[in-house]
Length: 234
Image (cartoon, rainbow, N blue to C red; front, side, top):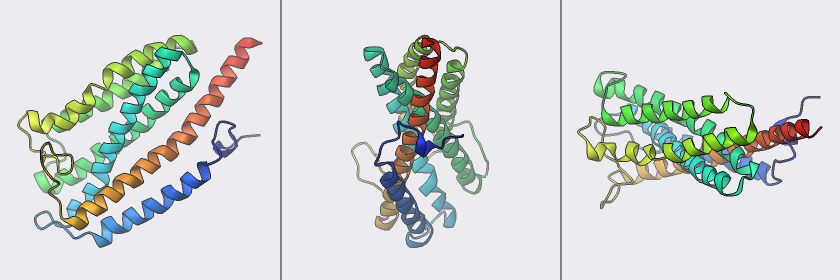
């Protein structure tokens, strides 16, 4: 019989509450982004892509920082749960990085006149995407649980260096991309209050979505690890 994610023994009991909170926050964030927040005075309605683009970027940053922390945890303790967290977060991070790039291209076309341009923020984000896709591909080259986890952990620690590079690239280099509007060094957010509220709600919703996806993915990975360990013990 096929077991659903909810039936995986590593799923915590509070997972249904997280699911409810995630769905509710996504609904509220969608309404705020599409209805409640005003259109931009210059860009008009297309600016609403920001409410997907920016939270996607934030969630990707969060995911890859978790990969870094879990990688350190694996090297320090050799506990399989840390490797499960690392690979799960890397997969979710790649998903949100891809969504960030797609949303950014949709926003760029009417704003810059092109879907893609070789400017620093786009290049560094694409490099980050490729690095973590490579991280996942490397993991698939070996069936040795411990050796694979160790090699991946080293990459997970090194690759996180690109996260601050992506975020600060618009400050370090000449760029078409707009400067940070929320996490601005030495300054307050530049958004209208309702836009800022909608954006922060979206970031909360995406964070909860990340957590929800992680709970299910880590549970599946832990069960898979257990099957591998059991098979080797027979």
